Amino acid sequence: MPRQRGVSRDLARFGAWGTTLLACWMLALLLLQALFGRQLERIQTLQLGRDLALNIRLAELTLERYPPALISELTGLELQVSERPAAPGRETQASAQRRQELRQVLCSRLSYCRVLRAAPSRAGTPEVWIELFSPLEPVWLRTPLPMARAWPPPPTLLLLALVGAVVMTGVLYLLVDVARPLRKLEDAVSRVGEDINRDPVPEEGSAEVRRISRRFNAMVRRLAEGDKERSTMLAGIAHDLRAPLTRLQFRLSIPELNAEERTRCQSDLEALERITGQFLLYAGGGEREECVACPLDQWLAETVAGHPKDQLELELSPIHLRIRPVALGRAVSNLIDNAFSHGTAPVVVRLRKQGAEVAIEVWDQGQGIPTNAWERALQPFQRLDSARGRQGHCGLGLAIVNHVVRNHAGRLSFRQGNGDPGRFAVIINLPLSETKEPDIP
Image 1: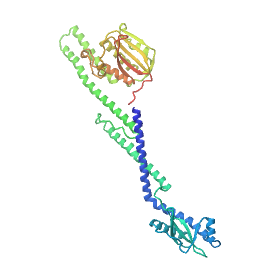
Image 2: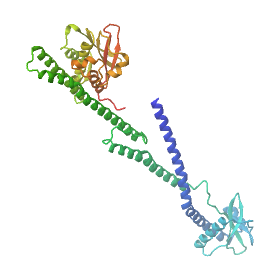
Image 3: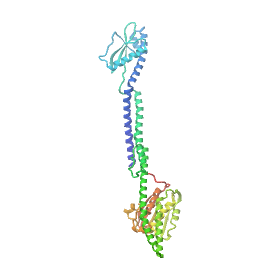
Image 4: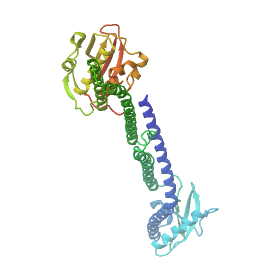
């Protein structure tokens, strides 16, 4: 559907610019006719006078020996013997002006000026009588007097108008589809530092400019999301560290600490270390780690080696894939820790292919997360169990995993089961192709 909309939009734009080109062509044709139509008429008159002058000389030479009727039959010239040939009922001003211009051209090319009189028009074309010099009788040469026509225009004007229309349309295209959207994009880029939550730049103009605008909007959107996450993280730091720090201050104020109090202080310090580690892991996400090709089954076996073997089961298929092993290993370990902390053993880690994806599944036997809370569980600092904060948890576990998986161009999903191999699973889905940075939509 989006592809069809894109094709329809491109066709509409093509039609609009085609209409613009046609309109510019007509406008250029009218301008050229107004500016150069008169000059073209004079050029046509000059060419006609050059041809007639040659015919007049030849006709006058042959009239000295041959009669006009024979000359007309041999040469095709329309000659008439008459003292005063037939005249039209009414001569238009345009034809009279054209006749005078032709007379001037003939005067410049012949030894003396000839008399030109209007002749009755035939087939809508004005004609003229031209007096010939004859020693025996008065002879007149009849010839058409072509007039400039408004339509269709001369081919020269059509070609010049087409060239001008292409130039005008190109300039309009650059102004409307390139320059104006780029100015808007430039203004948006200059104001990104002032307000990152601005409205997106309109995706208009040429295909290339629309692509740049779309990627710029995606970049700004990601920056805004990152800024929001940082603000949330800073707000969460103070909240999650306040409780263990308060307990430590209280216990350290006691003059003598017994073994039990020391154990509690040590537990609070471990909670602080765990919370700080989660913050650092979430802030990093493994973006700077290089992707390497490795056998996932062996890598997973090494990753889970530190967990209780009697409560952990592995179902691994031999698969090779390019991954960021450190970041993805922390994500898998985080899921296993969550399964042990908030689920029920045994925990099953399964690796298998699913179509064009690789699935890393972490199953446990607990109730899992309610379906209506799955999206909220992926958000940072969302603790579905209020008691987790007292165990050094700050609501970043699944957010860290989702962050790492997205940097592998993958996705995180949940699944309810019937007990085989578990009742609830968090699944990491990775594409079988080489891992790369996620494409900007």
